[in-house]
Length: 327
Ligand code: NAD
Ligand code: LMR
Image 1: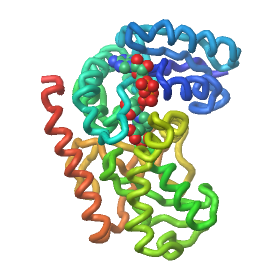
Image 2: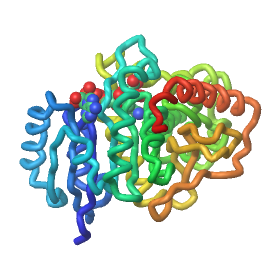
Image 3: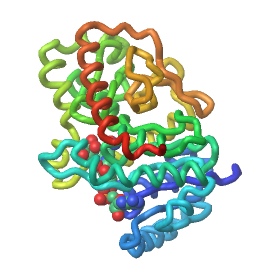
């Protein structure tokens, strides 16, 4: 049996936390041979509820669950963490854009970034889920000067999965038949689900759907899927968000399938002409615990305009939170 790894989860008593912890403990994220110690962070008033969640975790008698820690202190939660899933943040309500949460949530991620900097493993893998995820990831990263900036990522995998599933439904295929989708940019309504390299059953996706559907139905529906779920459920997505977080971390830790890519929000290195530093959704492959941007994809004018629009929003969000960066 492998030695246990430490997985920190913030907002552990929330909706996503409840859908996430049991799947991590059952081995869905890191494999059925990898024991985990769950280090769960909550605000003080939510600690009693978190105790209830831990009672249920224990009641599952998971073979891979090697320990639990419940705390309201980030320095304890991130101690020696190998993985950190930053979920704890306020969700938006109907009628809000995710960036409207920056004021309420931005302040959470500076202190957590500092605690990760001071206490986590030096090659910790951080995934920010709490919205607005890309810019919150940037805030955390900018408070962790001793760590490689590439340790900090944001979740666009839910958008990637939504984009696969909606294309599969339209073409009468299964989501496993869909390859080569990219979510460029921000986890927001400016994100750009790009089908120019996508295939369904090995054939170009854009030959199987018409341009009007792609432009005027598919792109807006993928962009607005989070809002549609809030409208239908009266609460933001939880199980699908948790599932995407599992997918993101599993791909990063265990690798992507040869010849395929996934979308991750990662610090831009300037690839594809994107402003360096912003946390931008890119097509990536993963191997040996590292991710790499897929290079050399052809970008036409249609894509360029959309990639630039979502980059502009990320630059604006960054400008709004620069005061939260460590000096
Ligand atoms: P929720 O309100 O059910 O749970 C959030 C939990 O975080 C609560 O238990 C709260 O006490 C806790 N929390 C608040 N501040 C904290 C802090 N400083 N430290 C630790 N815990 C803290 O919300 P939810 O539905 O679980 O959603 C969580 C976040 O994830 C929201 O911001 C939501 O918008 C976002 N989200 C992102 C995606 C994505 O694709 N990136 C998808 C779905 C939801
Ligand atoms: C989602 O995409 O479902 C989440 O980001 C929640 C939201 O606010 O839309």
